[in-house]
Length: 82
Image 1 (cartoon, one colour):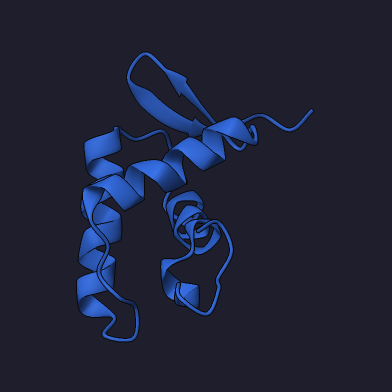
Image 2 (cartoon, rainbow, N blue to C red):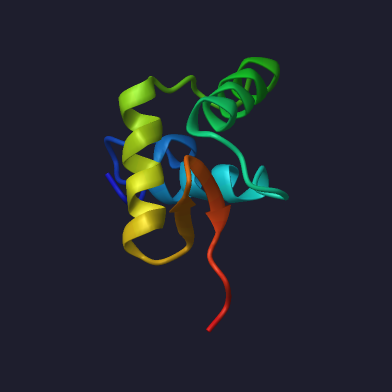
């Protein structure tokens, strides 16, 4: 689930989706804005499998748990480097 396996394609692994999310965090954004960016980018790129909202939230949760993102007043932002 977190890493690709023989049952989970590399483009659907949570680390891959999390990397996509981090790629869109040039500035703080709402969860819905990030969802729109990821969903639309996956529609345009036919090589990446579409994901549902639950899978997106799992990837966002993973980023929060490892300290890569913070939530501040409703905006998701990249965490400051220690």
